[in-house]
Length: 57
Image 1 (cartoon, rainbow, N blue to C red):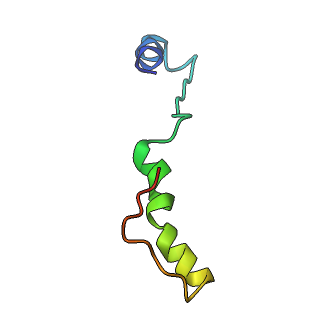
Image 2: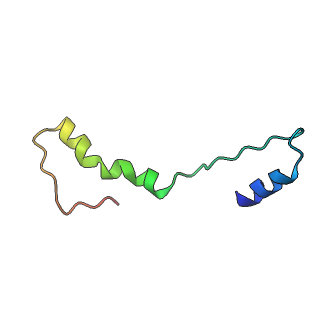
Image 3: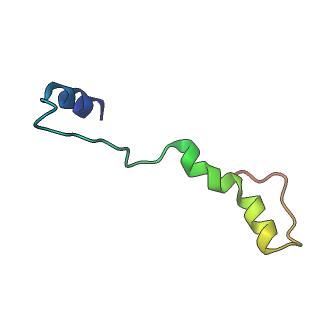
């Protein structure tokens, strides 16, 4: 990605427009729903017992 962004800077801005975006989510973006799994389960199942030793993946 860095190489593409550097090459894009060499192009004239009036003739080319280059946009880059990450296709792979970051580690935090992947794990945030897993960390909140307890909240989701207790909303759906109020009597759900949470395992205190739980670790996502």
